Image (cartoon, rainbow, N blue to C red):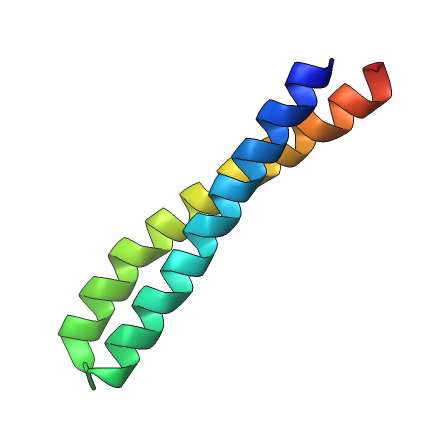
Length: 71
């Protein structure tokens, strides 16, 4: 069960890293002054990555909780 906890922690950190990266990309797009279709296209792609990072983080947390309960 210890391995499950460590794998879950690694997934959680990877997901959080992805979320931070999405925030930085969105801030960079805002600083560039993008408007209209250009901003919409960049944010539309970023939303998919953001949801993926959130899912990875949630799966990691589930693994950690499962490992703690079973261990």
